[in-house]
Length: 315
Image (cartoon, rainbow, N blue to C red; front, side):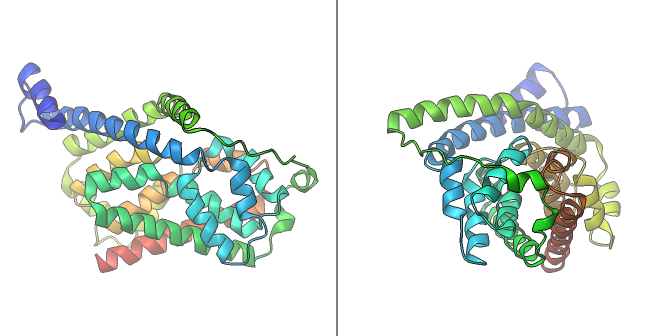
């Protein structure tokens, strides 16, 4: 129904030709924008109800004093259903460290939450099918778990800013919501989040539409195809400065795949955009010393590149 509506607008009302670049690009933009906002509204509302049972204080308590490896796995899984973004990096990091969560476990959560989330899962499922969605979620969790374990093994606690260890964050009581309160919270959360992310979605769809309609397929295949041995690290390097979330980057991913870019390269690009960003680095610099921050970015980027090469080889 959405596709027919988009086709009607572009090819009937606007009288553009289906074979024209402008027609293809505009049709892609209108259809994907409508589809993504419909998906997001439903998904965010449902997940907000689930998240209302996992406030930050409860998350910190669940992760505190967990055994090695088990804590990393649990932290990565909790990252799927708990809110995290660059703007909340500082208070969450301080709260996790103060409440006794091991540094490596904290980083597993830090990586998983923006990279592996319900928006990415449902949108990838809806746009590309369940196989690719599960591949992305599985590899994202693996990157978060392994990177957290490696950082934990390096024993880099001394590279956390000194004031973080000195801060005393009080333990807040966990408020139990009624179902009605959860519905009210979900409605407010959905409207608030849509207000924050809609520009990223529109820009992401717009870039995807431009790629879909105007960028020649042979150009992308030449620079990011299977025959280019440096396609994956180039994709990761390009992804880091692009601050976005899953909702904003998935339309670009869709357009890149349609143009023939290798799936491993596309996955690496998406992981880099969602898990590593310059704004996140700037904010985390307030709590991490340069060596730990560089180690974090280096380990995660290396893991993402390995994942990209692996999937280019097997798919």
